[in-house]
Amino acid sequence: MSRWTASLAEARPLAYWLDDPGRPRPEPALTGAETCDLLVVGGGYSGLWTALIAKERDPGRDVVLVEGREVGWAASGRNGGFCDASLTHGRANGLARWPDEIHRLERLGARNLDAIEETVARHAIDCDFERTGEIDVATEPHQERELRDWYQEMERRGLCEGVDFLDADAVRAQVDSPTFRAGLWDRRGVAMLHPAKLAWGLKRACLGLGVRVYEHTPALGLRTDGAGLAVRTPHGQIRARTAALGTNVFPSLVRRARAYTVPVYDYALMTEPLTADRLASVGWRNRQGLADTANQFHYFRLTADNRILWGGYDTVYPYGGRVRAEYDDRPRTHAKLADHFFTCFPQLEGVRFTHAWGGAIDTCTRFSAFFGTAHRGKVAYAAGYTGLGVGATRFGAEVMLDLLAGERTERTELEMVRKKPLPFPPEPFAWTGIALTQWSLARADTHGGRRNLWLRTLDRLGLGFDS
Picture 1: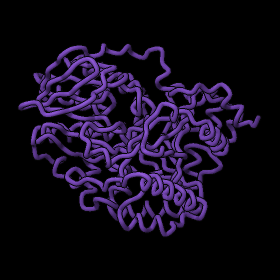
Picture 2: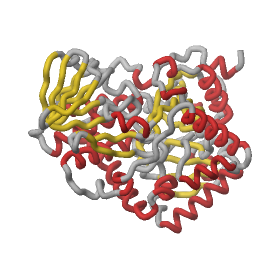
Picture 3: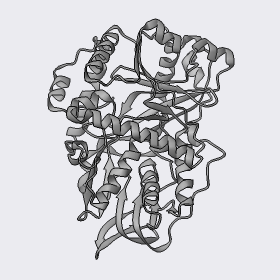
Picture 4: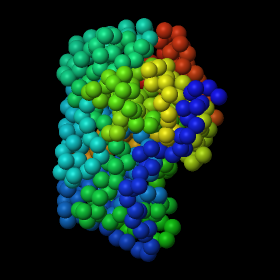
């Protein structure tokens, strides 16, 4: 047994965040008929933010939320807890796709993160919210050069407010790893939080404002019903004037929207709480989130009780885009992550992992959310967040509500909102293209960042696949 395998010997195959004795009991399932002004489908962040903001905009609006399992059980309760201000999956992606709107998008993203922090305080949501920022770290010579070049590009574009470049000594003074060569510290643009507690807190806030929440109530079909809509559930039906769909990785009730997303599986480990001596050996006094800048990257952060979450690297697209519970556990990826963890932090040898899990993320060909309407404007949807949905879903909720109201706002006038990404091709072309892209990204990581013909072609077409 290797030392890496030994570290996983007692790891439980479930998400650490959801393994909580304080987890709230689910609300009863819907049985019978229900009516409302606004039906929200999906009990993750997208749906919860939509329901909450709808009631805050109009306390008299009658809002119902349905969730197929339990609130927060899927991506919203399994992610790393990085709440990023970016609406575009990072400045680089936003600048490449919407250069003329990038300053507006950055301003709206910063305002959105401020609003999340304010909501957490106003509703007393106990989700370990810490606005620590995030450091992107270079671990290879070519990554260090790319990081310096990107910082200079951000300076030229006026996008460096609150961002500091750290050389090797400076970044290791923040978090000590022999692999770190440089870093970019975004001091205010990212918060760390407990993702499941955020979802549970949003549910409690929704209930407190009068939202009727039904769990274990999957929406099975949607149709026009007179001047409104009808949604069928296993044991009932809901008639609504309008509907907002926050189903993300799961098949949309708007069939034509399904081709724009595919699921990819992401994996993570959680350590036992670090002793004071072990934590001191790493430093990390400012408790930032971190991510390396490889194509196949890792993300890592401290929890409130000083565990380390370590995730990323492998992303797995299942043929046909199937979302299945058996994909949540992938021992060979967890072993690989454990190996990488101790390479990054050799001073932590002997630390054990208590939890090892995975979950599906929805991604699209531009890596950031897209929006649309259906049924003559009575239905709005948002999807495609690609792993940065902890923060951006609140913005997406506001967009959906704007679209349902038929309002022209600063949000709805964005090109990002008005235009959709290219859809994915059918199988077997989707699987083949994604596999080739992942192989090419891994190859670039081991060849000084050099992108092969396939990646350069995708770059020219504005396509790609996030690792």
